[in-house]
Structure formats: C-alpha cells, structure tokens
Length: 195
Image 1: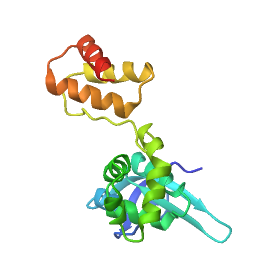
Image 2: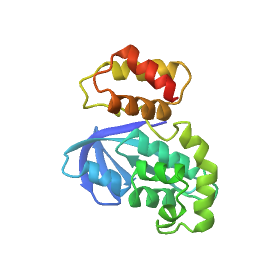
Image 3: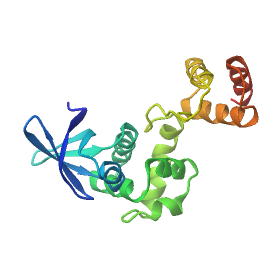
Image 4: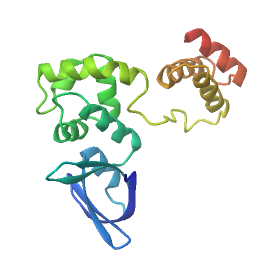
C-alpha cells in the first residue's frame, strides 16, 4: 500500500495534480484544500488513499494526514462515495467538517453541494462518536507556536492516562489561557480538574 508520494509537481489544477517521482508521473485527484496547500510549490509530499475497483484505479491525494483520515471517515458512511467526500473537503476544511459534526450543525453540512438532509443526518449519526474519539485527526500540535515545552509533556501524560486527545487539548488550552506561565505539574493538575 502506498502511504505517500514525494516528488516534483509537474501539473497542478484545483482538481488534480501530477507528481513526478523517480521518472514516473502519478496523476492524483485532490481537493481544493490540498490545491491551496500545494499551490506555488515545486516539490510536495502528498498522502495517498488508493481507490481500487475492478474497472478503475485512482489515487486520491491530501496535503495532510488529518485530511486523508477525514476522507476515510467520510467514505465509510453509507451513501457517501469518494467523489462526495472530495467535494466535502473542497467546500469545508477538515476542522470545519469535524466541528460541524460535533456541533450537529445540519445546515453547515447541507451547505455542501450534493449533501441533503438525510445524508447530513447520517454523517452526524455515524461519525460523531468517531470524531469525539479523535479519529480523523493527526497528532494535533495545537501549541506549536508556544515557548512552553511543558504543554507537550502534559498532553502526552494526560493521553497516557486514557483521556482523548481532543478533550486533553481543550482542557490544557483553557488552563493556559487562565495561567500562561503554569509549570508542568500545575498544567496537569488543573487540566485533570477540567477533564
């Protein structure tokens, strides 16, 4: 199975790209989200979902692992095919889809071309638990720009205790807003009270 293709961008349109890797040009279907991430780059790493049927073989490509995971969650819902999932990821960002599912925002999901009320309800019903558990997201570095290394350690410690990454991230984010200079021990203790 191909996990990613890294190579030179030969062609790039809002719907597909051709990546050359060791003399082979791979035609990869992409979303607008991925197009925006790849635009103005010469080289790229594209995470692949290999779609194989009797009569066709297609590569779907994504700029991030979290977008690919969301795509895989979406196509796991009955009635949602690869084309619809790609349309969803072109209309909304991965985070917007995740937040709409968590908030049960039918109107936001229905705003996507090709998604009706029943499909939106099915998406929310089938994916809400999976999204809450943190599926469809890569290891999120929410605090990349912070100078506090204790945040990363606290996140790891709380996840090891059995809490889900999204819940841990929310708790730590709230603690940091209240006490920006908290130590590792303070972050963990205060976060535990919020979990």
